[in-house]
Length: 409
Image 1 (cartoon, rainbow, N blue to C red):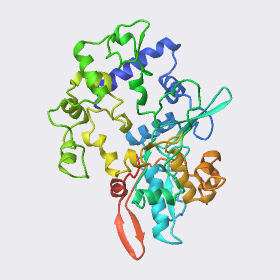
Image 2 (image 1 turned 90 degrees about the vertical axis):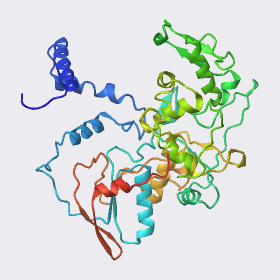
Image 3 (image 1 turned 180 degrees about the vertical axis):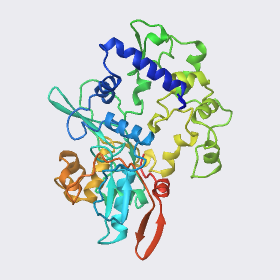
Image 4 (image 1 turned 135 degrees about the horizontal axis):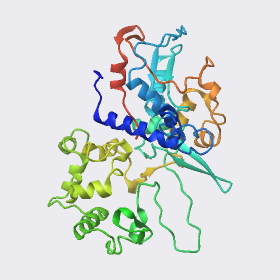
């Protein structure tokens, strides 16, 4: 009783213990175990079926680290005797890129180990595969979009180096007899909003039971939507992209300019309120957590600069051959190209977009020691000797993690 406990934990455990009586005295441990399938959800088929987001196993491992269950180190830990010149924690886009640059710059004979706590590499750049009426469909999990870069730029050269020879994708042409149905290259743009092909659904939260569709909301100026007149005006301004400021908003031109610094000093929510004249209630009711949700946070917590940071990669303008691009499985294709570049035998078939998309991962080839390190969360870190050529310096994983940089969204 002398140990401190938060009110949330007290209520949570009290409710859990009380609720167990409703399940024929099922103990809390079994009750929590029964939540696994509901928490993880259906992951489809194929290589990513057990890596659909932060699964129950990953969650439990993270909680064990949070609760310091591995301090001190487990008694049964085994020293494998392996020595590496570089150890990378995380096999996502950034981790794979770090390994690629190390492989290319460090020279022959240097060894690198990537530790990944999911069953397959990619981090946020994973895909889901589904069978629907006998047809295989692909969808992205997290990281989805890349942009066409200026020729000879750093990113353009990087894309080319991993086998993305034609970053500007071609798309299927409309061949139906009906008028063409406008579609965007990604699911994050509402290209057909002005054409009436979208609708908004209002359910019980808006006192609509069983619910109602408002089709062509922009064409109807949201008339018929169960919202207040003030909210309707704000929402229309947002949908039309109309600024409420007296002076037109100026996008940042380069990272660190005056606009960038100001945006980084306020939240994304505050920026929307200033630029579009929205109320905080409107932002939180209709825009959260979609806006900024790709970062795992809402606009009330994110820097306003996050909405424009992608522009600072300075892609080709829309009218000059550039646009947002997206493979069916999102940037899982780019992660697979990177892995194929690191270990040619990791994915069967040719080193091309088609090759890494159509062929399967050879998991046995991911580790030359034949002891795959998937599902390997890092539970302990300590200072290590880092070697680069003739230099030797003392580094800690804390600093290494702090200095990792992301090169793709």
